[in-house]
Length: 267
Image (cartoon, rainbow, N blue to C red; front, side, top):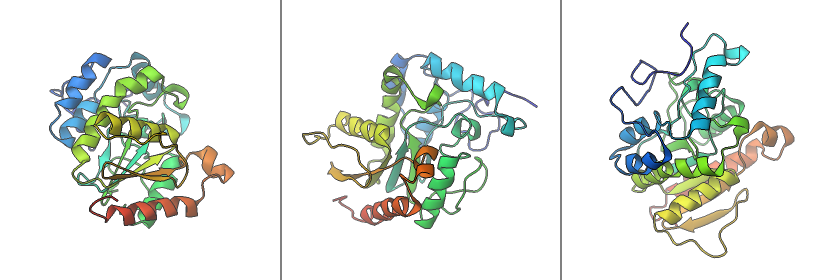
């Protein structure tokens, strides 16, 4: 079988890019390509072929070539993972980065790993997903009124992007939030990294942040510029195995997100 990253336009289910999609080859090109994407589809395509961060490119492609033994018979996506879900989402969920053998394998963020098992089951219970599982890009899963993305779009070594990589990826988040602002009423930050990334994006868009700057906490809620930001512990194995995050805790945040999203003012 073919190994290595999926080729843009090569037939991967849901691949938003093709051979003509412009590629950001360094961090200096990301702001321009992000800002000039006129639609979510165009932005997703550009995100999915980004090569701005050499360390992340090398890592995600190495993982796609070597693969984990459990997935040795599968081809890996091995590219940046764009956001996905309802293009008119009222609820936006933001995580840290794709998992090396999750989103980096499936091409869909939170799909195919233990964190995703928890998240999609909870989204289904909340009425925000049509299926309780998400295992591959072509499995029929669909989000209803919700969209999911990662603050950093490539799987990083040890799940830890560097400050420079986080900064290089930020324009993609800025552009995505800008395109979604007409419909998004609630943003759920899955962990402190995502919380800080969303606050930064809102500040760069012109939203005045209160002082002191809101601090992350599970269940923390703050209204900023017509958007309600909710904090939720990340559904990582470390959090779910230790009981720091339980199903009722996750359900409570998503229930709150859905109810708050029905307020047209986000207040």
